Length: 223
Picture 1: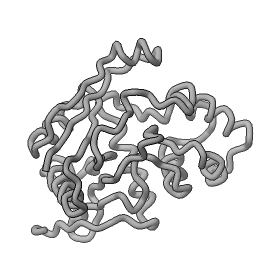
Picture 2 (picture 1 turned 60 degrees about the horizontal axis):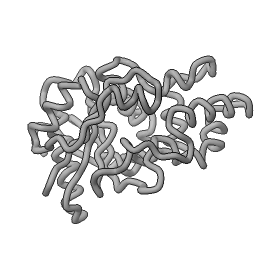
Picture 3 (picture 1 turned 180 degrees about the horizontal axis):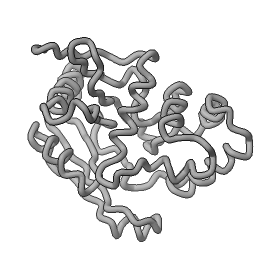
Picture 4 (picture 1 turned 90 degrees about the vertical axis):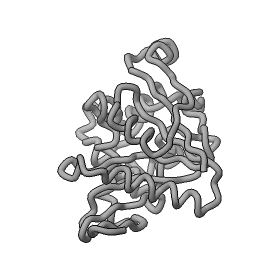
């Protein structure tokens, strides 16, 4: 890459930065991370939880080494994960490793049980919500550029690098998902060749989960 831009695979030393990236990626367009409601009264921040999930190897939406970091003059400014999805469990947290997450956070058994109950109520426990059925063999997730580095096309550069990584691993197509209303992300994805594949509107979430939510749109990219 030119102009001081380089990409590299993330390592465990990058976990604090990756936690911030995942947090930033979760905010638009509601300006709220979905973990925050599940963490109410636990004295745990969403950033702390995300970091603990990464350290425990408990994420279904990209392990540490699935992340590609974009650096500018040696400083990390953006990152995203590209990975082959778990066909059996595509919810965000690998619940079988929750005890390890709780250990990372020094949670009591009671706090862990409260969190587990809230998580399973939202994400269905062993039931996989239909909207989370993987729609491609190569999924891109948790895409974010640090706020101070936005507006210069770095997200496109990062996404193109991840797509090239998928091509090098011989995937035929890639998938990405965006919350409805996040028009910046939508325009970015479409500008590099992603096309809308399937939309789940707000009424789906109100009927299935009894929650107010604008819905999501899945996008596909064919190599």
